[in-house]
Length: 181
Image 1 (cartoon, rainbow, N blue to C red):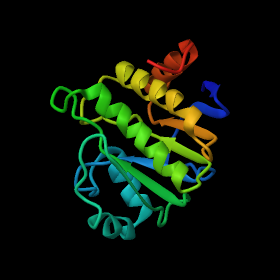
Image 2 (image 1 turned 30 degrees about the vertical axis):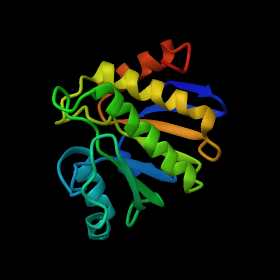
Image 3 (image 1 turned 135 degrees about the vertical axis):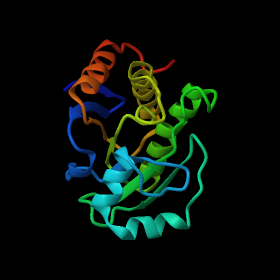
């Protein structure tokens, strides 16, 4: 676990299950374009949230890479789910800009809703193929750069399922010296 503060916003990394972050106002779904249940994070979030989430998502789909939408949390312990469509690595270009846009847009939606805390998975790193180290760098720098414009969000947690992924995010966070790219 690592932690850093940028402009009164704490960024932290933890190993865990994104569906069990009961102290966060919102969690982020690494969604598919149709916002349907799937594998990985999307499947886990939809299973934990129950069928009401899929019904609410129907009217919001489809979304494009880099976009995000917000829904209720349904049966999750969180008030909201923010669904982000990350880029498919090697297909959706420019991948780094689209991935950074996911994080910025999710933070903007959380801030507009008056939320104080949000949990992110490593968007696009599963079946979308984004390599973990570059994805961690894009994610952490995008969040740090957005921190100065946030008014209500004070805690951003990166919830990594695998110990190896946590180690990558921790290394990037610990070596960050500036919050813009």
